[in-house]
Length: 132
Image (tube, rainbow, N blue to C red; front, side, top):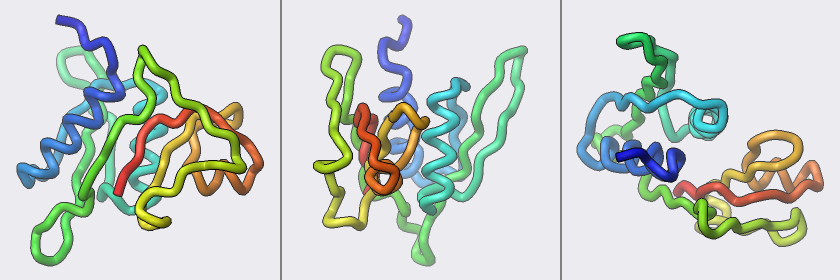
């Protein structure tokens, strides 16, 4: 069965691997997924990532991050827009996740950004997901 929402599939894989305390998780590659993973790394939610070629297909290998007591750094990750329901936000009313402790990822005309950077650049866009 084909995945109808690849981004939601990626977020579910990361959430499940994090809760199961796996060291890494492999995700099929796409430009949007790569941009989301780059934001997760820059915001400190994952250790690192790299592109891996396996059986002729390219995957993103994401190395998950845990605190000193081996608890996952990602407490929650949630898809906002879906293929059947696109959610948009202007820069003036960009949602805040856990009063600023979380991050919302937005697809804008300037690329994929965090909600905070999108508001700073005065651009709105489609809300992809939120992480806390």
